[in-house]
Amino acid sequence: MAENDNISCGIDYSTCVDISSTLEDASSNRYDFVCVPLVHPRYKKDFLHDKVSHRPGPYSRSDMTLSSKDWSSLIVGKISPWLQLDSDVLDIRKNSELALTRELEWSSHLSLPAVLMCLKSHKCYNLARAVLEHSMALTSLQYWIKVPLMSPHSCIDADTVESEEVIGDTPTKPAKEQSRDTWHWWNTFRTLSNRLKCVSLCLEVTEDLPSDAEVDRWYGEPIKSVMLPTSIFICNRKGYPVLSAAHQKFLFKFFKLGIQVILSGAPLHDRGMLVYQQYIDHLYRQQEPSDIVTQFSKGYEDYLQCPLQPLMDNLESQTYETFEKDPIKYVKYEEAVYHALLDRVPESEKSSTTTVVMVVGAGRGPLVRASLRAAKKANRKIKVFAVEKNPNAVITLENMQCYEWGDQVTVVSCDMREWTAPEKADILVSELLGSFGDNELSPECLDGAQKYLKDDGISIPCSYTSWLAPMQCPKLHSEVRATRDKDKHPDTCFEMPYVVRLHNCHILSEPVPVFTFTHPNRGDVSNERYGSYSFEISMDTVLHGFAGYFDTVLYKESVLSIVPKTHSPGMFSWFPIYFPLKTPVQVTAGSRVTVHMWRRVSSKNVWYEWTISEPHPLNIHNAKGRSYTIGL
Image 1 (cartoon, rainbow, N blue to C red):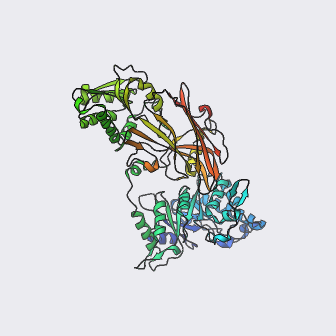
Image 2: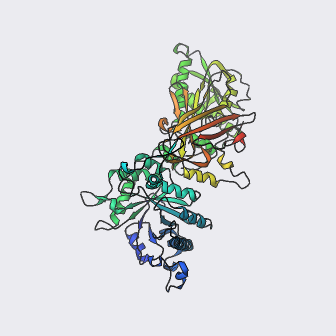
Image 3: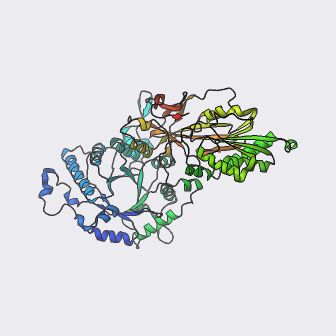
């Protein structure tokens, strides 16, 4: 399938007499792949009693009709639509099971990239079992599950909907109402099939669209393709097929997930299917240009990374270089130092007072440069101490001091917590923040360094707060599960946080503030923290964990944030952090999610523990730091 800067489009054929001619037709209309039936419908009832093996003629077209390359890149096999693996009639169910097994085996033999099968209701238990069983054969086959965006029964009069059944104090949707919500069909199937990574969604767009909240919920699912029936298109003034404004908005949203588009149905224009492909390609090119954060993070979407441990490990030059490219962070730091200098030294004393600025954790010197620029702008004299424990970064600092900064900067190769300063600082500047604010041990480092700060000295940053939000993210949860190490406890991968550029996910409720740290910590307040935080959930969904963010006040009005609503425009130094749950939790509309979060501290390590108590309790994750700690 096409993987380039253009949209990948395919055609869904209901029948295919000559597959070579079908491919030529699709290619001439600029389509990249085709979805075709695997077998002829005449084999519908011939699997029971071994009739297939006695029927004269081949079961399907020969694998030699196309080259292996074409089979594996241009063809998506359609599973027969008549299959009813969950029928109450034994013969129909058994016949369907045998037919599905045969078709999946044939698909694997052809090395097809994917098969497309329809989900027709929430009753899909046996189908899910059959797919799970086949997936265990170590095949590379992908399963695209076609689900309509809305069921034909979803637009009924509200008066006909049965009233809520109540079990205890918790209202639950009646089965009939859930059967009309196609997301429940999908959720049932993927839960039964053990949330396989090889199972993804083909979302069939309907003429009517659901609410924005329901669309957002679909956005959090592993959608591989979107199917557009030609019947939902309308004609513009020139007679060409176009989509309504609402459908265009829908497509623009899902284009961001890198979906493939499949056109189905007969063409309603005399130029055939070509005009549909041209229109979809036109829409794809009409997307708004990506912002700087999206451009920077391209290729890192939903990619799990272990949080940095700068106290334990020395960062590499490439890592420093990446952080130094941020166009916002150091501008804000410069602004903070500028205002701190103005507040610290009155205009009348600027020629006689030299402000001592200590940059702790100086890295390769971006904060030193920002401080020097701020001093020049404020017309104030400063003396800078650049303290850095990484001996490799110190080499860079010493070069800068020798050839650029001169005596105005003193380079100190030492851990900030162990250094004996020759004098106290007026301003203490650091960039020790992680994706959750305190997860790179800024509190411990700055508490150790504040002994160098004058009693009325200024710390930049002066405070920071971590934030949490519940999240639906089946893709991330599957990625975490895939990192299991056979030599470790199977829960280990779920008991550590991950830095990740959140993309294919859905935030279920607005983030709330969690832990706040203030510097200097004059009251010698413990850096251990605990809190419980509740969220109201507006619709049925699945909870896979929590997204973590932070914001910080550098000085007065100078702030930085990665919290979605207050995100500093253009800043990409930090991605959010993900705290997974071992077991996804089904959550109903109107219910509450309550998370408990601990920040624990020992003489050697810091770690987080977390769990939920609502809608029902789970085990405490990472108890006593058994799976993940941050070394002091």
